[in-house]
Length: 367
Image 1 (tube, helix red, strand yellow):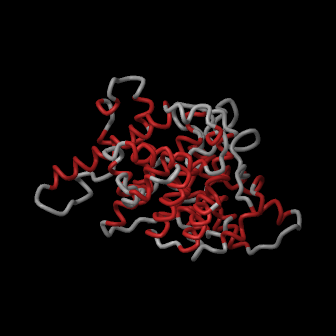
Image 2: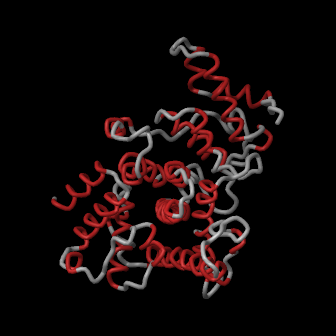
């Protein structure tokens, strides 16, 4: 495949607004030219030609002064770098990611003017994405769970309104540099950021399809205002999860099993939206005013709902919580909700083989 030439407008703006280039030109930093070229090419692979770029404020140029720039407005919290040293190969487990980066990213969403694509949307999408990823991982498929969690968390980070996502290039730029600042190389940052921009510049793999599906399932929230049962209006052909054309299911009655699992996922997604959008425990709850431990607050709602009715959330109970919620268990019944949450997070972390997160959860349980 012939390498695509980077257009002049893209190069001009990259040189003008890229923080590393500016630092080099000002004599504040030394870096090999090859590293800058690699960064520019990787970004071009993600964002595409300058003529295709979008920026939320459509009254300004798409790129250049007053429009799109290569200066990110989202950064990791450096005070958490010591904790990141616990990661193996810079690959955090889900609970490490939540502790180290998700809270920071959610705080960023708190500043955005579009609540419909804010913290609840991101946390629900993370839960759904992780459950789908675990389903495939347990089936022996290859999924990059780290890429899933970063792409889902960052996919709307620049969005400032509803309708078509005309902010996706800014979100992808922020995602690219967020990962770079964490120490990931250009190729991996490109891999994750590419999942945010909707184009046909590459073929999506299973990891990207999961990221897409988590966002697609959230459309059920919009459909709640249009139909008595949003599932009647949901476009199942837009859902990649267990599509007959791409995924095979062991056994003879594949179609029945496939449909049952897909419908379980769709129903769980809708019930999760109902639980978090209408439950009075969410509205006015101080825990949902904070970005810190926001994910745990939603997990706590899920756990208590399953404890109340063991038939609820079968897909999430199996593939997000790894069947660690046992409503009939005397051990769980005697605990207060906060203790139940800590214990189940402890068990999930142990299942996912993360010793450090197990210690963190145990400390939460004992406090």
